[in-house]
Length: 248
Length: 264
Ligand SMILES: Nc1ncnc2c1ncn2[C@@H]1O[C@H](COP(=O)(O)OP(=O)(O)O)[C@@H](O)[C@H]1O
Ligand SMILES: [Mg+2]
Image 1 (tube, chains in turn cyan, brown):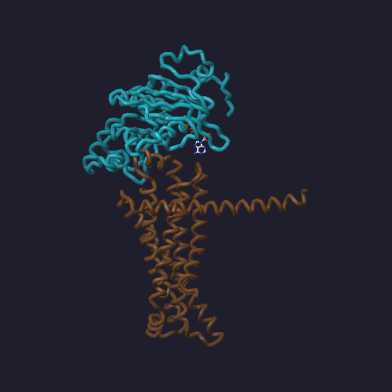
Image 2 (cartoon, protein in one colour):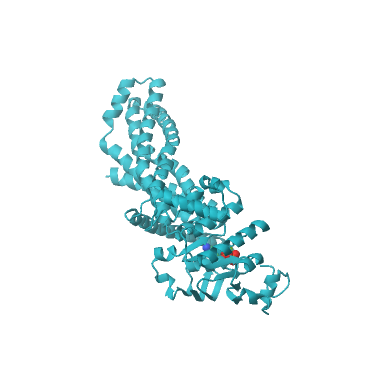
């Protein structure tokens, strides 16, 4: 279980997070929605310690994340970055096997490669892509490589930052289904960020809406449509008029 | 009021710029100390180190060679012309040798490395930062300092002295070619004069300067890359600042090293 309490973060005068309270139960898939620039990525990065919150507390299974041993802590996580963040100087399989070939539990090269090939197959990439460089792949394929890298070490917790942004609707559907399957079969705790409602319905057990630096609404995905929060309703239906200002 | 406002605000911005420059120097010093502390602690990324050796050292050879040969040639012409004014044109071999080895070799190689290597390191690491690759490294339990900075800085520290050595030799050869082909010097005596005149401290000082400049050039590239702003503009700014800062620090360090080793 991941718990955030009163987490705040500002960049200069830009108060991005203003006291976020959120609980992600173990083994569940939480999807955070919100407009672009509302601080969804900052929220994920705060949990991972890539961004240091100004105040508030973040705990994993009750223990403060700042006091954890960094390597052991990070080894429990996998993350798919918004732009893929593949290392372009390394081959596809080396990207996927990056963690497997380093650190305390380092595997021999051919074993790591075999696992990478297996994970790439799992996300629907053919063996031909294994020895290519990320720059030679299409956007959708890069996302899949990022996905394979996130799950390569079989983490307990997986973060997906806008997994479908920039993909066509069919590829989005494929990626959504993959995420759902992987999370279910691995029994992992997942946190996905998106502003794509089809992803929300495909991936979420629970939904949280971030707006104006606070969690505006959170609950089960099945309760989302009945909720009477005007902000949430405007977002779900993509209306131009409503309480959320459309010019930001 | 309006008469005073202009000079005051000009002074204020100059003051602010000076203050920022000093603050940067402080942060760079901290970054340097951090880099050194990571060099001595495992893990060490051998493959990244070998790639950096190739990039910093081997691939810089053509640029260094061309810079040195033209400079050595021009130096010989100037010393000959200047020396003629008091009939001292015979000193060309000695002055070319000492000028190249003590000053021009290290400084020019240092500046060429700042142009070629510092810029590419800063742009590469800044792009990695902007595209979240640095964050990805961290989440994959790999310290960016160890994985990116240490291999490059170590490669700079070890290979730039060698490049300076090569530059010194090629520069002297440039002087030799101009002197013997154009100015009528005897080949054998030119070489003999050069070798007799140069002393071990000259060569050692050249290599020490190379090591320091290599450290500065690569460290500054990494520092500005890691601290890049966001977007394409961030990458551009990081690259520009890295090259400017590295060049100035190399020239300043050269002055300090020359004063310490030769000024007495
Ligand atoms: N490293 C940073 N430095 C300055 N501002 C930042 C930084 N990271 C994010 N921001 C700002 O924080 C806000 C939220 O960013 P982000 O979390 O990326 O939004 P999103 O919800 O689209 O993922 C934006 O206004 C962005 O400009
Ligand atoms: Mg984002």
